Amino acid sequence: MIKDFDTVEDARKVEETVKTGYAETSIESLVQWAAVEDDLAESYEKLAASTKDPAKHDSFLKLSEESKRNVVEIDGLVTYLEGLDRARAKRIERLAALKK
Image 1 (cartoon, helix red, strand yellow):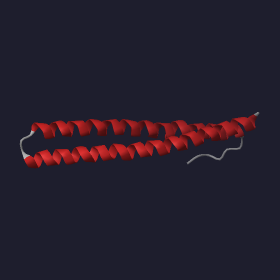
Image 2: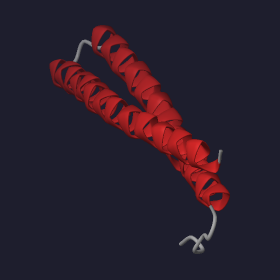
Image 3: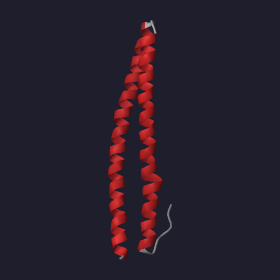
Image 4: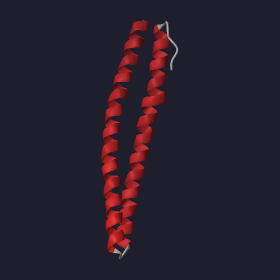
């Protein structure tokens, strides 16, 4: 996937590309996904409140709860990826120190 690198500077550039092109964009996408799930949960709750059909009411509430669980899971992924991103930043710093 990547070309072999022969210099510290090339290694740093690859590490920075991984950080900005993969880690940061993945975190951003997950944060947006969690926000959508939050909106879905709220919308399903409104639908549940607006219907008189017990079966629909229960289904909407279940969908809302699923979206809320998704938010929790996505938040866990964000936390994990933020840790990987911090580790990547330390790698970049280490490579920058080697260049001096």
